[in-house]
Length: 332
Figure (tube, one colour):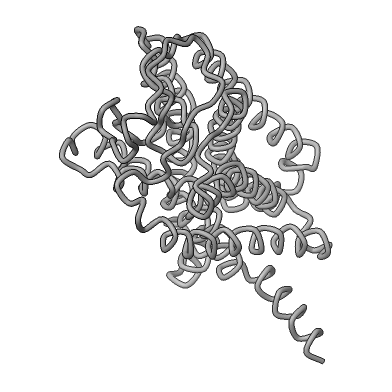
């Protein structure tokens, strides 16, 4: 999906000693070195505490969503199928990066093999794209539920939902496929140290001693074709939704109908607002400390997987009720 929100240039980080820099010519380095959060190495152990706690909450929360939807037949509907897909995406996104981050913080295990780095790169970009696509699918579900409530079950059948999920997976998987291949083709003859805690595409290819215009152009194309299209379709869906809501006869009916969209609007805001903010920082925040940019990047990897279960768990009456019922049964 989006490019890693970092305006990194080789030479902006020197927390390693010069002896750690690999300046020998190599075409495909056997390993890369991840610095974690450059400039804050002394605080890594303290930073790891909230990161570990949030990762635990993300895993527990998303597995809880999957468990509740699977166990409760009344939740076997389009919106909850999309929510389960979002939970799976969050689990893969966070698990593909956070364990390595914690190993850097706890054990100074900074090395990552080149092939593992490329695999991680693919998972990060493909699943971040899926996350955006699922939010579009949820927006379509809200549009059908509000604008065509009597036809909701006939329009969004299980077959249609499965096709939508498959389309989201294929789109993101195919569009992310060039990233590792582009990164593999460049010669890396300056350094194999990247000032990050995971292998983002731009963070890696900026280490190449070659013209990486193709990588940059493809990143822009991917950004416009995924995020641009997704934001457009979400905007169209909510324009139609709001038009239908304002046509309702009473204020209570309008508020109640709009309330069914609050969880989805919160999820959209949690994804796109930090993305927009980080893009502005990359382009105009030339004096922003590098460690702050890296921390902003962690929003995509950790904060969203934590927020989604909280947003949908607290705002969705059926999930909240089922969760309370499970705890009540355990207590009795």
